[in-house]
Image 1 (cartoon, helix red, strand yellow):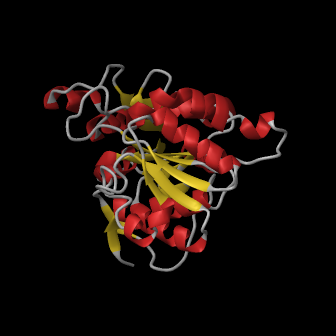
Image 2 (cartoon, one colour):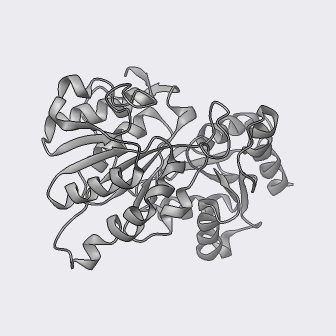
Length: 323
């Protein structure tokens, strides 16, 4: 299988699905001029000039246009330059996109995909570095995908483009350039299907986004200490493959949940609560969480490094659990 970066994997998914389905179109800021800030939409304007629209700087207009187009039978893929800017379109996301099918009694679908570059990268500070998965998990009607590898990103994007639901597609900026093997044959990855990235018997680590790679690195280090981590990537937080997570915890009897959101009220809180409720009788220790500090993302390189969860923090949590 060829090894490609995540931004290319998502680009391939868009090109392949646009060739398959003429109702798919792309819109967003700079999606033509620069292929978007991370080059994901590069080449679409040349191949499908009538199916890409470069928009003014108005997230409310971008999402509102996407919702209206979806209700009329199209499949819009809207890029929000940074997930932080979705705050300018929360009415369109929360009160419209998420609720239209329910409020119209199932008479219409809203298959909008919002591509949301997320997380810390390039020292762009508090207004461009947030991780907001938990916000969207809290809203019934939205699906939330968080790929951690190029293979998962392409497969999940293709699945999203064939679905009926609005999808918040979280793309961690630091992962765009990370390469991984991607099949050169047709495939999709269904939503609600977690992936066991590494098997182990001692501690279950439920990791999403960039924390998957850090969990795997921690697992390699701890293996030399005879501590074997089982690393599970949910891939989609909504719908959540809870069965795979629970089965792992029943085997290991210990659990760590890690993500790059701030710890207070993050998706790690929801997942650890589910584990504590459903697997209480199997747990030999409380569920631990490793997440970002409860602070706005600093601009200082030294402070940013302290705010973001690290391999070292995962190692400390795991060693404490088996002590």
